[in-house]
Each structure stands twice: as structure tokens, then as C-alpha cells.
Image (spheres, rainbow, N blue to C red):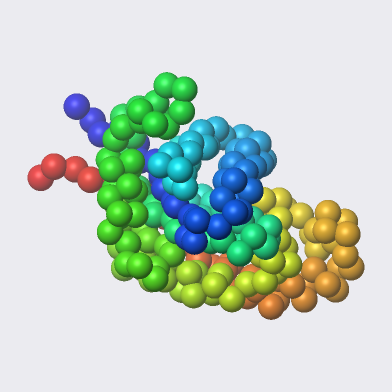
Amino acid sequence: MASNPVSAVLTGDLVASRTRHVEAAMDRLRQAAEDYGQEWTMDLRFTRFRGDGWQVYLKKPLYVLDATIYFLAWLRAADLDIETRISVGIGPVDSTGTADLSDASGRAFFVSGDHLDRIPKRRRLVIAGDGIGIWQTSIFDLVEHQTAGWTAAQAEAVALALLHASATHEDLSDRLGITRQAVQSRLAAAGWSALTNPLGAFRGHEFAPKTDR
């Protein structure tokens, strides 16, 4: 039997989740999934589990770096003093579940959940699975380091630039209610230009399923 095409699963949990902002953070992540899915015409099937855990499904893994950064940035933009860890699993998906992802199955779900359980305490991002090698994991390491220093304003600008990929700086300034120069300043301070090639590399990568030898 041929392998199912690979997909991406993002599994996350909140850091410092005992704060009073847990519900607001979850609402923010749910909104991120809805907005991203609407913009890119896909159902991410946002599912909350274990109180402070969450999960989304990406049918096409080529957008996995976009989505990962978007979720990080949109939560940071809320300035809730709470963060999320994200474990990305790439692989076949047997089922995306019934009402939500709570009963979904497949290698992508297993890899994503398993690596979240094993992620080092101070780490925030990890990616593993089919088609993932040293350059993909290295990019995730660098993105984790880069995003850690973003202010809420910088994160908001990056999130909108990712969500509306064809938007000009003038478009973003209208959405943010600031000047075009302020948009440019926020994106520059966030290192937006340094993300261009990594995003392009993921979008053009062929995530091939593993085959039995």
C-alpha cells in the first residue's frame, strides 16, 4: 500500500501557564488558527488539550515555518507575558479526527507529540519527521533565538506580514494604524529580511514520506 502524503502537525503548550492569562493566550492561538486558515483556505482544526496544550494540522507542510512563526508572533503581539513551545511533526496522517484532532492519528501526530514531551526545558521550538534534516532543524534553532527578542509591536508586524504575504508596507501601515516608516522600522528590528530565504527554502522543499527498504 502506498504511503499517505505527508502533512505537518504543530503541537504546543504554554510556558508559565499558571498565570491568569492562560485563557487569553488560548483564545489568541485559536484566533491565529482561524485567521491563518481563512487567509490560506485551509482548516487547521485548532484543538485544545490537557488544559494548556494545543494542536493544529497543516495539510501542506511547505508552509510549516510560516505557520510556526505566525503562531509565535501572534501570541507575543498580545503582550500577555506568556509563551508557547511548539513541536512540529512531519509525516503521513491517517485521520484528522472527527469533531477535532483529539482522536486524529498518523505518524505526523505521533512525532509532534513525542518530541514535545522530550523537548529540553529551556527550548521553545523543535521539528522532526519525514524530510527533516540538519538544515531544517538548524533554521528552527535560529528562528527560536531570533524570535525570543521580539517586542509585542515587532511581533505584530511580522505576524501581519506573514498572514498577508502580498501586502505592501503601505497596506500593513493601514492595518496597524502607523506610518509606513514605522512598519519598516519594526520589521527591520525584528530581522524580517533574514527570514526571507529560510521561508523560501521550506516552501520549496519536498517533504517525501519515508519508504520501507
